[in-house]
Amino acid sequence: NNNNKRALDSSLSDDSNAIIWDMTPKQFASWVRALPAFRQDQLFNAKLLPNLIRAISPLMPTEQTITTADAPPPPPPPAKKPKVEDNASLINDPYDIWVGQADDQEVPSTFGAIAVQLTLQGLLHGMTWKNAQLQTREATKLATALHLAIKTKMERDFLDTTPNRIREMVCSDVSRGEFAAIR
Image 1: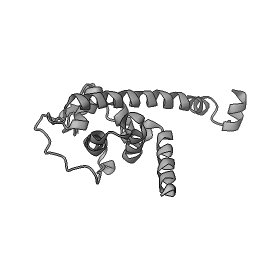
Image 2: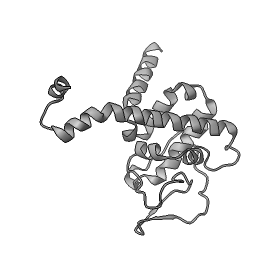
Image 3: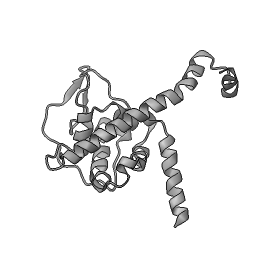
Image 4: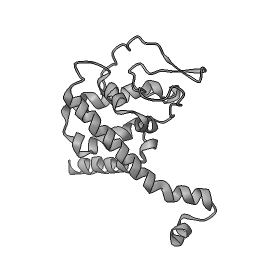
């Protein structure tokens, strides 16, 4: 049993070290569930987080569309006029999670990058599937906490990856060790 707990803890720490904009749905869920604000919250872990993961799926390129075994099947999407991007392609956003984005803004190609760009309202729509019974004060508080956690992790990841990006732009022929010695 302790071995199982250690294995779970190590997988969570691996996911928390992943750069948020590169996270897969599984890494994102593990990272969020490891955060103190969400670790023990039954409503969030059983319903709201699986809903959010499921709601992001239609925005992803079709070869990356995800499913979650523990998430209930989605309700039929509300009837709405699809958004048009550059008059060339349609954004498939049945749960209105891409709300607040510019009409011509390109949807990122990775799960984590989509999660980073969601507004607070988009997160709430994704977590509740715009179901009035789930849009409670508690869900709004959880969406706010998740939005803050995502933004904080994004800033931390941005700062952590800056030296490597600078090295790649300025002196890509210098090894990481040599670059560290220069700094």
